[in-house]
Amino acid sequence: MVFPEMDFEIFIQMLILGVGVDLTTLVSVLVACANIGSLSLGRALHAFGVKASFSGEVVFNNTLLDMYSKCGNLNGATEVFVKMGETTIVSWTSIIATYVREGLYDDAIGLFDEMQSNCVRPYIYTVTSIVHACACSNSLDKGRDVHNYVINNSLVLNFPVANALINMYTKCGSMEEPRLVFSRIPAKDVVSWNMMIGGYLQNSLPNGALELFPDIVKQLKPHDITMACVLSACAGLAALDKGREILMWI
Image 1: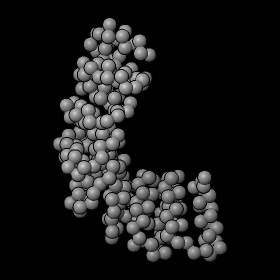
Image 2 (image 1 turned 135 degrees about the vertical axis):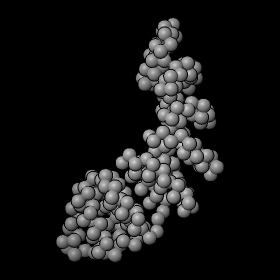
Image 3 (image 1 turned 90 degrees about the vertical axis):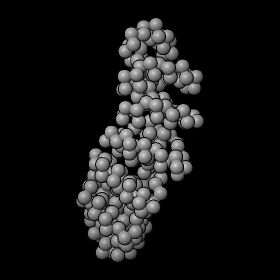
Image 4 (image 1 turned 30 degrees about the vertical axis):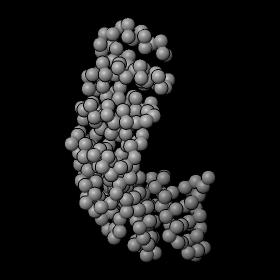
């Protein structure tokens, strides 16, 4: 394994020895910079790349965008994105994720709309980021639009997307739609089950949580969080006998 600090040392030695730095090398060092969150060094590498005439390279700009995003510099990421002559799905996903990370959910949703208008097809991480933005901003209608986009464009409803949709719907106070998403997951994981049970409790529907429990134990061993949620549902309903029955699974 090569550690980020070693990447920097090798890069500095290259400069001292006058060895030419190509695009691949600079991108590798920028990735290392992003991984340790060194904004000052990232800016220096940005300037070096511009002087080396790499500013027109898509891979350089995408890596810069990711570096500024991971270093928490929204202005830097936005400036790189705006100045990019050519953007890719990686560019759009990075800038959307940056806005979501900074809590600017409406702006992220606006970027997703702009991306679609530019005929850029999102991939899984783009979808999960924007669904998370909808959940945090309580934008149920927009979340439904994204869900419809997933269906209409035959995107794979894998665990990250399905779980993000379930989380979004439950946070927005809807339980019929996440149950439909949940039912279409071929082999549900513990996160999916916990999100559904937690969603019922969050929306004051403890009976719904208890109805799921028999199905859970048929497919997997209940997680500690699952048990805590189900027992909470029993407490909310004053269902002592049901609670004792569930305790047998511990």
